[in-house]
Image (cartoon, rainbow, N blue to C red; front, side, top):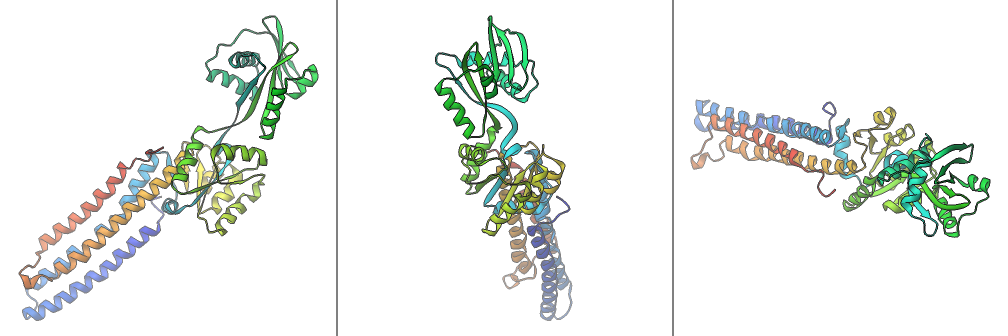
Length: 416
């Protein structure tokens, strides 16, 4: 970040360069005018020329942006944002659409229980506890998700015995002297068991959303159905709403089916969805948005996201993602939290605001002070001494430094 230069830094560098030539020109002009007035190069003429050169020292302009950048980098790191490219951080304030990869970015890339339906008169906690107990020794991702759901509810698991694996169908065990089974549709076919109508409807609705369904069968009765899907991060919805409050659109890129993508998009309130996108075509979707006049940021975590991260105006990589994705991005979210995308926009706006204030102070100070140092108020009896010029020059640098330090007080968590 320190090695790269943003447009604002280049502007400040040009302004400092212009200031040098302006100061030399004004000093020469003042020397000529006052030499004519005093009839030669006197001590007073030299003092005026020195004062102009001292007061015009471009310290303030030279430090205006680097000091802010240093504090921006520190504040970003404190909030879990690593800046690889300063231009990316500066551009973030102008974004009008953020495109998220779904799996691993908006979701956890972990299977979880997203819905439970039970037969009439059957307690939800009871069936969840029994199912978790039956799946207690299995390493299958579905079994882990069931156990995690029971753990989240802090349920006490009953004792089971006679555990067996039914290859390709599920598992069975004995609970309170009754055989219980856990498995998918093939288990129901094997047992020739038919679920109640409302459980069948629950399974169909879940399937339409791209969710998997497993059943708990007690004896000959199907008593519960569990819908399983990739778990949406808790922070994703808050992040989408916060971006909308900042008048930024949100899009989602995924290789999943239309049904799965629509379910996630509807839950989060996403504006545009690109589903069934092949890995090689993700960057083309970014190009489409750019051709529509959008300033696009891409947020992703996988190897497949790298071309889109590079193609976007700003690439934002999830820190837990692949090295290729991280190397392709200008900004990195260490905590893999979608809410940090909102913080990037806030930090970019605050940083640009401080840089602009410092540049205006550095430029405005010289616009006023150089004519004073050149003796514009001499007809009214005031000629600035070199010592006062040196003092004012130092004050301008101190003010720029203090203003840059106030950036640290920016609360990026406000409103989140």
